[in-house]
Amino acid sequence: MNQTHDAGGDSPAHDDIDEGAAPDRAGRASSAAPPPACPAASAGVSRRRLLGTAGAAGAVGVAAGAAGGVFGHAAAQPEPPTALKSVGGTGYAFHGRRQSGIVEPLQAHGHLVAFDLAPGAGRREAAALLRRWSRTAAELMAGRTPQDADATPTGIALDAGPSALTITFGLGATFFDRTGLADARPAALAPLPAFSSDALDRRRSDGDLWVQIAADDALVAFDALRLVRRQARDAARVRWHMTGFNRTPGATTEPRSQRNLMGQVDGTNNPRPGEPDFDARVFVPREGGDGRHPAWMADGSYAVVRRIRMLLDSWDELPLAGQEKVIGRRKSDGAPLSGGGETTPVDLEKRTPGGELAVAANAHVRVSAPETNGGAAMLRRSYSYQDGQRPGGTVDAGLLFVAWQSDPLRGFVPVQRKLDRGDALSAFIRHEASALFAVPPAPAEGEYVGQPLLEG
Image 1 (tube, helix red, strand yellow):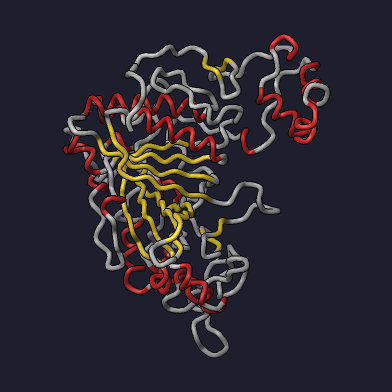
Image 2: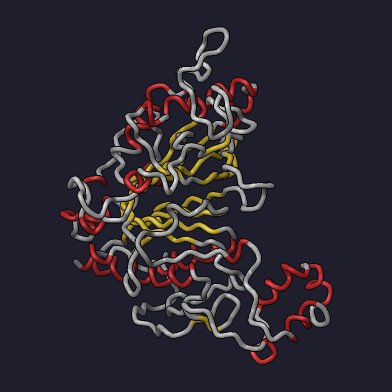
């Protein structure tokens, strides 16, 4: 867990579509630019307008009598529709320099889905699929309803704003063999080494293509998932699908770090945007690479995905002091056992009055610390999961670990090797699935993810 780094569709294919205005999820005509202001009396009141007004006047007024209360007030005003005053109003761009879903704040709901190209599908089919997916992702992330002929609206997310939706695409090592592009496969995409603690289910590992969908609204995330799966049509089939969650924004009195299902504060020492070495740790450089990354991966990243089951029944039997010793941090506020607050650097040399190390030699924070791993670090952007119970009645829950780095050989691999040799937390977790994907940079307007690779 690295605490301190801490199928087929229903309609025919149409890859050429009308690029004109598309309705947003509230049913209005929309485009990339905001619509001009117009009187509500002539334009009508959209559901999104109503939701924005309800944020100020109170949802009870909407339910109690829309025609004479909030609705009547909204219809009588000449000002343009108000923006959503909730988590629904946050949006991210699909096009640009780097794909979204890497550095943005963690969303509350996530889907991780791997696909394999269908038998007989190759480079042409893969390009058409990524073109469809990219077009649809751009529309959904803008809060609009896609107008692609094979993306018939589901109605699942009607009335909702973009809700911080991000859709991120990656390519597995086998993708390059199946598209005849083996010579273009990055050296950094070499298979991860085997670790002694692995108990991997290969049916839930790897994959030709990977899609990460995340949003602060569950219906918005599921809507994107349905369209991505439908648009795969005969080109690709789902290999595995995992669903995760995090704390909902605004659930705490002030912004706080996430907690995992062990109750521990998680992610304290993640690299942060703005730090001098952040880009070098997370993204492939534009220039000066060492030959492990082809030119089409510049500004891209590599994602390691692991399904880590937590042995929560055993964990819960440990007393609080025992849990904190395993991690090396206080459970209450995430502060290191060496003293201070959550963000205080861990003092690996500090000892207790009795002469023992304040942070045990096998504590998770010590074993995974960059200073004990030659500076190796990665950006973790993970999700908790809960999949019912296992045979025997134990809970099947844990972490969908997603780690971003410019090179797995210098990020995930050295840290996991160290954890594999002596992490106290290993007795309470099981690594059950694993995958590695190359995540290309974001496409420019009018282009699709991976286009330089597939058409170069």
